[in-house]
Image (cartoon, rainbow, N blue to C red; front, side, top):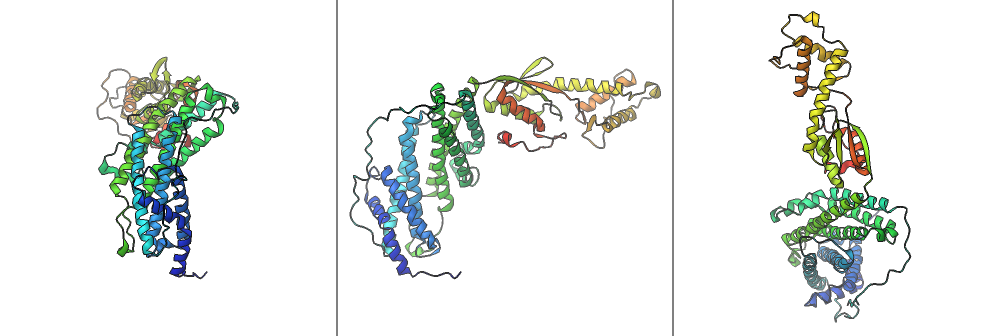
Length: 515
């Protein structure tokens, strides 16, 4: 297909006609001394709509790749983005009383006002530059002010009565469990973004290239939007909202985090796509609309920090909700085959239990361990190793692997030990972690029969981690059935490792443990 080039005068005529309303809005904005009149949703909604339409028209003619028109296209994109994010900030501001948010360690109302002041200043500068650039391009800028009455927002106090009938759902507990668990999983997925809230200003740029990139923020934004939709579809207007008053509070936190993620995504997008980008029409180049450090500051100090604080609040709320509806059960699972409850499996179990905020106990040989603490689980290895030693000794006797009369008077028991190790390994009852096996230079030095000496030496190899045995040991976990289901899945997946302690992928349902 042959590409046809449009004459500049024809394109100028087209943009003059189509951009008349946008240029009128920009003219009004550039002349406004106070942002109070223009930072209202009616004005911003119109500004966003018009800039969106003109940006699409400019892109249809590849204006972004044309030296004469690329700066006008860039200004249009800036007005579109900052009018949109300003609208979202105003939505947060107006919706705050209905969100019933839990208190956080900052004045969120004041912080939102500061973010609005920032975006309003950017819009004002963009409008002034657009009016100037329009004149350079020969575009007609409408004269006269806008009808202020149309762009005002006089809101009487109060809300409409809730007189619609409520819908019935099967069980409140299932609804609460579904939403609270989904939020906790998203909280885990937000770990990197929440960590970025503790970054220092000199680290902001590196975070935007990593955990706070537009791509990662947009993905997280979509997940929270889906959770909000799930609530509105299955919970809003139901009896469950009246029976559990924490549900509307949770909904408010889901919504505010979602809208804050929208603002964060927009700020990150503008930083990555537009900040420090050199336009080619140097004779008419303007000063940058916003400095990189100012944009990063509002992204990190307002959006990211507020996201982290409200997720923290709602995380505790969800854990409290789950505790109320906990159904206590029991599940018996296999002990980790590689060295029992060492660092990796103990840490994963602890993270799993803490994720839900539940109380779960592990029982072995009538002794209880707090599953929330890795150190508690480590203690269980004493019993695990004792059971392995007993099992090893019984197998040696049962299989008659040591012939006492044949070794009478023999001081070097190494050949006998190696024979026992080989015999057990061939039958799949022993795992060798060291090949070739190096026996300790010095024997245990204990007195006794050959069988006792060999058994002691095997126990020492076990303690040194040179060998291990598959004794089919099990542990009992007691607690909330929902948590136990994940523990069972973790156990079935080898606790995240194979028989040699190598890391293996976890099932999709447990990916939050890797974050």
